[in-house]
Image 1 (cartoon, rainbow over the protein chains, first blue to last red):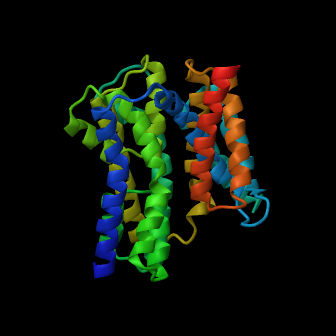
Image 2: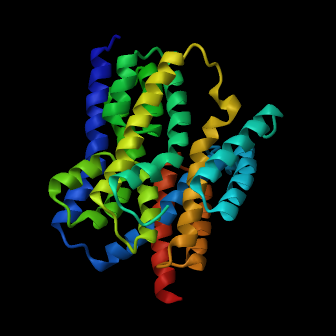
Length: 111
Length: 234
């Protein structure tokens, strides 16, 4: 149970940074009337940010070169997406996705 | 997911995402253990910094003895997407007190944000403090506990990826993006599909020339502007 001074500063400093970037927008939005273009912009945030987060796991960055596909993740994404289309249940997407990945790993498919 | 907005339904709605938190949380604990971080530091990171992917980056930078300023800047950049998400989510809580807004804001994550956006498609655009707090608190506690357990198990589990748990997070985002696509009647499916394709293209091009976190932000902002343009001119 040891903690160095550097670690303490990192935890407190990074903690302040993450809390502020999460909580301050709530204060601003509550105090100010948002211009309509900004509201329009923000209606696209959910779909764009979720798509970008998916892309982060489906593509592999190769700095300076074209990105490649994360083959294992892309393959496991197929049954996971099908589970979503068939059941519309988040739980089923997650469970089928994990099972698909376990099978891929067992047979060492997709690296 | 039904339209109920009680604390209890918040807890129930967040349960499917808990798999992702447990899988990645255990993985973080194990990584932290092998990077010689103590349980206290792991708990401090998860309960005070509470930043998922940023915690992995902080751990590796600590191991490399990077300067504090570098660690702070990286944490801000990795987490800067939260500014967009919080600004978007905050619109649903303007009628609540400032204190309640701060409580919700300090525990928002990628997952509970995405969950809330799916939820409001089912409630005619309404969210409640009780529902959001139920979802936020479960996510927060499960993440913290999973990372600490991971750090304790550290030496025992050599390879948590063998059982596919590392894919839980990706699967969850796939599920959330699909549910968002089919249930956002305001934007409609075809417009959203165009926007998704555009985001994927920008992200793919961007990661060749910038870090993944910048690419994520660039693709998100470009996608929003593209969507605004399409909505206006088509």
